[in-house]
Image (cartoon, rainbow, N blue to C red; front, top):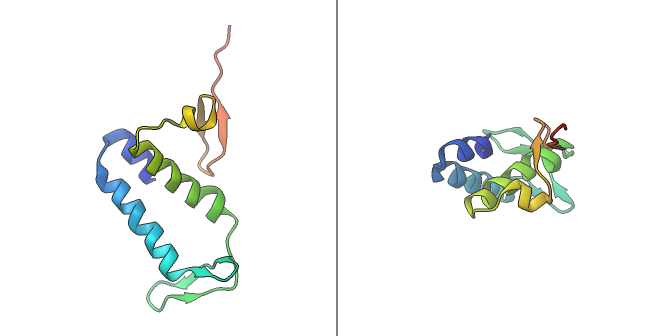
Length: 97
């Protein structure tokens, strides 16, 4: 993901890619009641559905990428140290006695 690539490299190209992605989503997938899936990227034909992972993964990682570029850590955003699953769910990092 662009988030982890940015964290590893601090290369702003990944943040810019996220910006383009968000712009394209707004331009091509925004519908009256949310965001539609794009069934064909060439024709930009939309499907009458929004995948559940769109909010929980796509937008979450986009947000985290932008906030990381602004110098905020995931720990400061969540209030605890965590790692993220591939689906974007935070798991607290705990130390064992």
